Image 1 (tube, one colour):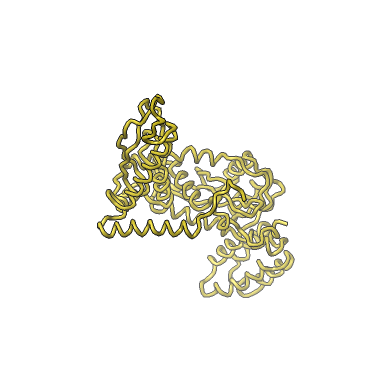
Image 2 (cartoon, rainbow, N blue to C red):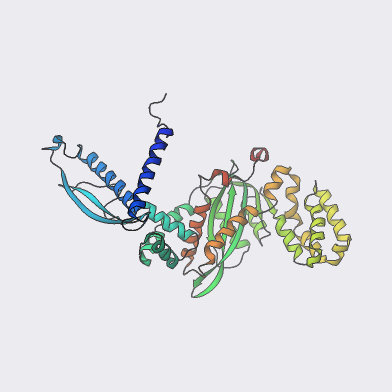
Length: 410
């Protein structure tokens, strides 16, 4: 047996934990104490645990236990405590922080001058990422923990992620990506006056079949070849040498930009967007029949079979009634047909941009309650925090794009 391996908690440990919780709850019931707030059960437990840990840090710093005779003549000793109030996940906690005589003690758990523990900051960032405004966050913290925090404090906490955002935006990327999905969402940003501006989003699927948001870019104008060339060039400069398939929703100018950046890449238009664009031209009473007839085109076994299905649709009743639908499919044909050459495992992954659409939906939710942003940086900060909340390395199962990825990769 490996002596360095920490054994997992067993039935005995679980039973002890349950007994401690039961005693604490009985004590709270007997005294009528609240769970949170000053004097609350969790607040007192948090204080006790933190103070015990600080005492342990002091013992490690001095090299001897409290009241141990070995400390006599050591040149340094305990020198009482000082009161310090910090914000924690359990609310405001007042601690007795131990001191030493020569002032060399530097606590790690509650650093000097720190007024908030890391967990509190993460909670504020989590609320911010969910689209809550500064006012909403203050109200939430006051209601849940009885903590009154200033707008400046929340701004300092959220501003602390700016460096993290810059590092994330410039991090090196893998050389080869099987699939990259590209889309844009619109947010309102004040620059003199409030205007809707695009924010471009790229999501890659790596060799293990897991999705990763590659970057966010705020644009000044509408989507076009020049804008997309800037975004794709940045991805290439960060290490992306080749992409097999770039999936998009028929964005203007994107196919040309992809070809110029990665000549061997295949551009695939989202089939779902083609169907939605087709239904816009038709009366609702014909939607069900239209979907059935269009399905024969995008589920065709080969490109030749798809061409025949489109010809049949064009000559049919609905094709004659709605020629604009025929023109829509003909215009997108060169970007629609590539996936027909692939086996079913790949078709399921690339025929739509639902993967990036689902991410965009959650990003829109994070921006919807804010109305508009005071600056481009403020918008990117919120979007980055929202991305960080939903796409993380530890959420591997959630981030995996296909059940049979290895078969599709081969």
